[in-house]
Image (cartoon, rainbow over all chains, first blue to last red; front, side, top):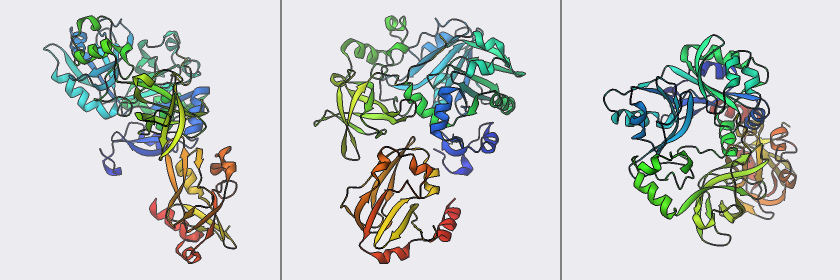
Amino acid sequence: MADSAESLLETPLGALHRELGGRMVPFAGYAMPVQYPLGILGEHLHCRAAAGLFDVSHMGQAELVGENAAAALEALTPADVAGLKPMRQRYALLTTEAGGIFDDFMVANFGNRLFLVVNASRKHDDFARIEAALPAGVKLNRLPDRALLALQGPGAAAAIAPLAPALVAMKFMDVAEVTIAGVPCFVSRSGYTGEDGYEISVPAEQAESLARALLALPGVAPVGLGARDSLRLEAGLCLYGNDIDETTSPVEAALTWSIGKRRRMEWNFPGAERVREDLANGTQRLRVGIRPEGRQPARGHTPVHVPGGAAIGEITSGGFGPSLGGPMAMGYVARAHATDDTPLELMVRGKPLAARVAAMPFVANRYAR
Amino acid sequence: MSDLKFSKDHEWVAMDGDVATIGITDHAQQALGDVVFVELPELGRVVAAGEACAVVESVKAASDVYAPISGRVVEVNSALGDNPGSINSDPAGAGWFFKLELSAPAELAELMDDAGYHRFVEESA
């Protein structure tokens, strides 16, 4: 992975991040702002109280065109793509033949095409995998010349309404083609914070002017990757590479809900045998939420034990929840210990830290349903 | 506070007799971001210069704090348990970490003075 300053890629907002005082760090090969002068804690709380603007242009965007695009994508994902109604979006997984998770992504049906947003760290692999599986007549168009902005928070809809009134009528997971401040955009009412808000795909050359227009709205502040991570963890959302990867099955990861009902009768997606087996007999381990007692956070890779006993799992993401006001984590534990309130012991730097299995999200979602 | 000494690990040392008060620098707290938890050394623990003996947890990550000089822990700032944010708001005052009774005072000569530390920070930026 690129980590020297010379070899890092820039998003179309690189200059704006620096002007805003963003502290740039390497992330998935890009120079990205981990925080602005407000700081991770302040940015996190601001997003939950008003609205935050995130640059997520490092993520991969592409469109899938052709009459059988949905069927072609279903050859790679257990999601119900064919049943996705026009102008709706869905969370989906790319699965491996062995039943692991190749990536998680969003797919939207824009009527004449499917629009995909995939993880930055996986985009080249994802697009190669999709392209290799496409039948004649279906084409993947990568969209490297588009930026992606996320406006998230309880104040997002009211703030952006004067620029684009059509956005207000959208519901959670609706998509639309909307002109915002004169810029034609692909918009979804979704995000990665647990809050109401929008993800806005915009031509790269107009990204900075749109970002400036959004930052000028009342209550909108820039938010970096640091708060993006604490917000998504409070919302109980997975981070690919931490919480899910090619070694975790969709059932273990508690993402069975992303598998279409019809697909669970057809069993015609990569890794279907593993998923079928997992659903029939249960998995050895399950992804759960974990709350340490007290204030001490437990980070990723912290071993999880039965109190005073054997190791039964590992934390995959952990930190401090600014809105929760305490530490929080998610990870995998043996299925017998996966029920809410089960006492656990986390071995932090060799010392046991009392914790319990806890329901997620840690902070209630506030989507515009 | 021109009599403070500084380590390359961004700790400060203030001497009072043969007892040193130790904390992290303003530069260090800015780099760490908002501190949410601190693990302090046990009273009486004997530490060597350069030994990790405290942990500071920000929202983002856990970082070690090193003993800038050798000695025995004679006091810790237990007020940080309820108010770890004072490490950000007052790193050279209320945000102190622990006090050491020095076992090798000659090591103080290895530390940087104020001007030297500022040069060190600029050069490593």
